[in-house]
Length: 422
Image: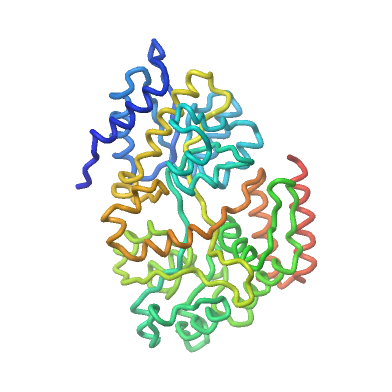
């Protein structure tokens, strides 16, 4: 049983309380969060501890199923009944900022003097919520991906991920060929590796990252312009197409990569975070993590894109509720040790990397070393629409065998239209 250090928690809350005079009548703040079952019991403890140390604030916490969360947020904001504080991802932060829904972090209430001190307190995860030197959220989860090998399947192929893990995408082709097992019709029954084709979000986190490795940038965040019709995008798209069609190593017609890995049908998967360990254990998989490959001729040393979830404050909430919301946000986001040990969520609060539960697993350094090099996917309005458009262009090229130059040119025009609305 993980024990929550209520003395430490309450001391942090007291500091937060002392940063602002008492508000007289208790202020009630509406806090909305997405569902993460391992975190729910901790949420209750943290709310209780905060309210005990801050009797002038009541926290009305509502948990929504993941599939409904963003839609409920949008409905709430549109109707004026949205929360004062909400926990959402870097995927949506560009849309919310553009819509002027985000209040900048109240540095004084959070207990810091400037952005540098904020970063020292909460770590590099702040970067995903920073625009033009202003932070708009405090991280409650910071994640990136590494590749994971099913050791038994690698041994069957005569390989050892400790020494045979591919460092480049070009090497991944050869390793995947050795790991792949086919039936009499030459159809893979165990794939050596495959991309995650299952959802457009992975076109940002993985495909876009491979473009980044080549020095390309598909979206200019500041100018809100698109560059999907580039040499770098074409190179990555050609590779994905060859993976499915020329080398027949995988493709969108197969079981989604994460599900296939957990079922023992995929020897290598590269879109699990450190949070995947419990799933591997439940599936009985002996595993080894290794870094995401780079291009042999790549110019940027980065793996797949990072993402994070942040406590963010509704800019339309009354000032007293905004202040109270930042007090709770600072308290909650400072509980990195408890979030890691009880809920399996990594944050960049410095103390997390000093925990025995963190240092005892050497593979954690793969994620933190990669996180130092990672970038966040473009944080722009229309993020989901753009991801959908990129996935459709991918399928036109990979599945329908349309001309890549034509499809990417049309994608760029579509992306420019989407961005032009903002």
